[in-house]
Amino acid sequence: ACAQFVAAGTAAVVELSVMQPLDVVKTRMHLQGADVRTGDNFAGTLAAIRGIRSTEGLVGLWRGFVPGLCVVIPRRGFKFVFYDRFISLLWPRKDAKAPFAHSMAAGALAGGTEACIITPLECVKIAMQSEKASGAAKPTGTVAFAAAMVRA
Image (tube, rainbow, N blue to C red):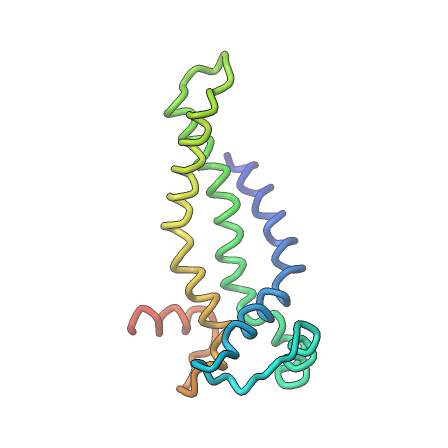
């Protein structure tokens, strides 16, 4: 189980390192609508990348990376570990492959369990990526954001 978690976590780190800038751009573009005032008005993906880079520096494209790590590593790892646990509970026979229905049920249970654990972390990540949308004083750092969300 530990080896699966580490392998899944390593893949998640590589994935996040590559995809984080696009996730930040996606979040910012979602927030530039009429109801949210971010000060941004990006014409497209490349304009958003240029705009974020020019106003916040290159590091702005990786805003929310630490909470993102706290999301993707357990998300991938727990799914693998929980799936194995649930499939062995639903189909304890080791001599035969589990039927499709058992595999589906184990996958659904693993995904549901993972979602219960990960959703609060995902909220912190999105709050950090979209902090520009609020004019209020902003907490700095992952722990400060999480604490502010708990207090709210």
